[in-house]
Structures are given as C-alpha cells and as structure tokens.
Length: 450
Figure 1 (cartoon, rainbow, N blue to C red):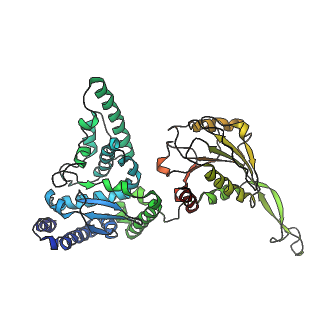
Figure 2 (tube, rainbow, N blue to C red):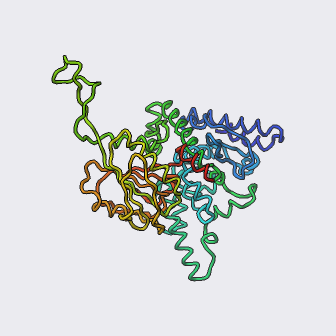
Figure 3 (tube, rainbow, N blue to C red):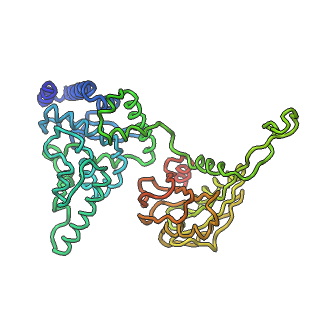
C-alpha cells in the first residue's frame, strides 16, 4: 500500500513527456494489488481499455461504439493528493458503477441540468456505501440523510436514492417559490456546482458527464461487451472469492449471460406456438396406431393463438413505421394460424376502428391524437377477451404515458417500445418489455425517413 502512495507522489514530479508512461504504470500496479487482495475488482479492471486524457475528473468512464473505456487524468489526479488506499477505493468505485449499469441507466438524467446533480449523488451514494478508505468529499447514504433531513437506508439501489432526491428537489423548489429564495441548486446540490468548476480545484472524484455522450444506437453493443467482461470475471473467481463479495454484487453477477438482444418476433413465435388447437396430419411422423404402414401419416398437435394488438396513435410512430410492424405480424400468419385483431388507442381504445389483420395487412387510418393512457388498454381487456386461454396482448407504443398501472386480466402482455426500455414511463409494468432500439430493420427504417 505504501508503494502505491509513493508512486502517486512520484507522478507529480515526472515531466510531461513521461506522464503517460507513469500513469499507466500506476494503474498496472494498482490492478496487480487488487488481483492479489480483491480479485473481483482486479479482474474487471484488467479487462478495461485505459487511456490517459484530459477529463475534468481523475477517473472517468467514457463510451465508445463498442465498449466503456477508463480515462485517467494525471494532472487532476496528483492535485487530489490521494493515498494508495484512496486510489484503490476509487478504482473499485468505478467498477461498481459499471457493474450496476449506472452510465447507461442515467445517461438521460445527466442530460437534464435539473437532474444531473441528483444522478451524481444517487449513483455515488449507492456505490460508496460498499467501500472503505474513500477520499474526502465522497458521497454516501449518510450524506444524503443529512441533506434530506430524513432517514435514508444504506446500501440501496441508486434508483431508490434518485427517487428520494427528486422528491426533496420538488419540496425545495416549492418552498423556495413560496418564500422567494433560491432553488435546490442553491440549497445543497454541491455536486452540480462542482461539475462546472475548474477541474484543478473542484473536488469531483470521478467523472459522470461523459456518460451522457454515448450513442443510443450503440448502447446494445456496449451492454453486450459489459456482460462479457462481467461473465469472464465471474467464471474466473473461485466459490470462496465469490462468497466474500457483498450480496448485491453477487446478485448482479449471477444472471449475466452473453446473449443477443431479445428478438420480439422470436418471443411472438414462442407464444403463438404454445397453445394447442387440436391435431393435424404430419407425414414426417409415424402413425402410432399402425406403425408398419409407412404410407399413413402420423399426427402432431396444432397450435393457434388469439393476438390482440393495441397501437398507440399519440406516440412518435408514423404511419410507415406502424405499417412495417403490422407487416411483420402479417408475415407470421403464413406460419401460425393466429387470429390478430388490431385496436388503435390513445386516451381510450377506439373499438369502432378495430380490424382483423390478414396476411396482407390493411392500412391503418389514424383516428386518435390525444394523450396516451395505458390503463385504458388494460381496462378494455375484460370486455374484449371472453377468456384468458390462448390470448396474447401486444402493445405498440413509444412508451410515454402514466407511471402506475392496475392489472385487470391475467393474460400475457408484450410491450413493444419504439424508445429505449429505460425510458418507459411505467414502473413495474405487467408483462414483458422489449425495445425496438436494438432491432436493425427498425433502425434502418428510421434512418430512411430522417
């Protein structure tokens, strides 16, 4: 540990031409220490691409088209005067941001000035509660408790802290409006203030600003890379090493499987092919009653499904995009004898405009234009579906509506979003949520119209 502190001190004395080499050497020595003493963090860090750069913070995760890279700014790092233990703590801090997907989860919030500081507090507090030897100024749940003036549970997901901070911000804004004082930016959000300060004097410990610069179109590729890094890390750890990790870290490692993004067509095919609808002749099967007679066909179970499609008319989907999606559904009818009924909706479901989708889809004539109310779809299901057996509900929407829903009928629901899944307004939606943002054909269609 003393050697790392010594190397940090030496970094301040090297010439500009040697700074890149010295910074990389400092990083390698830190990774070696972690591989020996804390292998989870060491394994992750050893797989990251490191660059020496000029971000305003000592450490920062930067998005590329294929991965997240770690940038170290030696000029800012030496001004922090960290010890070796504090340097290791901040490297662990960065790994936990990556583990819990903070860069992609909060990219949108960081683009909003009123929420940027809150996102920094929430993500840092969620991470730092699991760390020791933190540098001065590190935010923990205790700091949030002091700021909010109410109990704040330790070691919670960042979303819990972000929700509490937003409620506090709203209260501050209301109080400031009533009494004519400054807003929440003036009453305690020091992270937001420091984000615009001189990087050589500010006490920001790691950079979050770059998180918002990642392209949405390449997010799926970065996520696949992240899963691969964590999967290889989990596979390299012994059972004893995994057992020493906190439960929240173990839980984040367990479900990681390197897969391609879920294809909504595959999910529909799976649903359409699971409901029995009698039997049909199949010459590829033996006739069980008379197996010696090869000319007699066997039988297989035929399947069918009733599919109810609700199309959001108030969203960002244009007529051409809706026609593309209905065309994809119609193509499935050539293989699966399903009955597909299409219902336009906005603030209500337009039953007088419903139609049955044929193998050649009809043109959808838009009749709505009001705000989106997803509860209207759920409320209509008991009237439209006489039984829950053999039913499948597909909702095509841009994902912007209310936050809470009350389920009305226990039927499988697939939410097909034209926006990224993390922008879906509904909290804990019933059913499965799939975003078209990772669908190459959808993206090509969007590009052709722009």
